[in-house]
Amino acid sequence: MKTTIKLFAASAIIFCFTANLEAQNNQSANANLTASANVAAAVTVAKTTDLAFGNVTPNNVKTINTEGTVVSPGITTGGEVVGKFALTKSASTQVTLAFSLPTNLVDGSSHNLAISFADYSSSKLAKITNGGASPDIAFTPASGITTANTSTTAWAFAATGFDVNIGGTVSPIAGQVAGTYTNTVTLTATYN
Image (cartoon, rainbow, N blue to C red; front, side, top):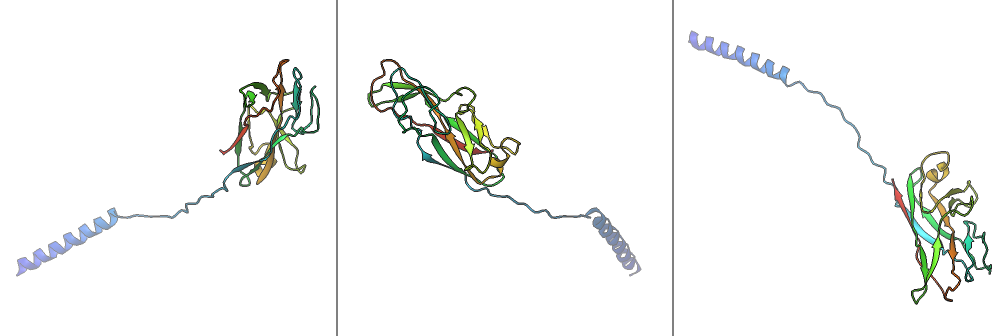
């Protein structure tokens, strides 16, 4: 029996020692963090008005700026209208605006009328506006623009919506066939 007690005592000591080592080896700590995401409102683009050059005459270039004003030679009929898109987005978000621009307008018989969206003098042919509440932001349509939180585009970055105006230039040739010419201008707005 003495041997049994000794064995029992030795086993108990070994068990306590082993349990104490395991407790020391299994020490742990934890902390929590919160995962979060801010879902931005979908960016939307809608056409407000089509870009209309009105009547043009053969061999007379006609440019309409972002105010809808004829700024180069060509017959003026009062039907000239700047193209306009309305854009909505979440406040304080950066969005890139990019145009897909045609090089020709086409009539129903596949005749072409050259159109361009390059700068006319020092005036840009695209701009972002906010109904006169903020300074306009001019840019070159082919280059596009990103509304970042910078001194140039800070108000558009902060805004939940604004208009994008686009003008252009048509260049009828001397023998331009009479008719109505059309093509599509696409504005794509993408969150960065």
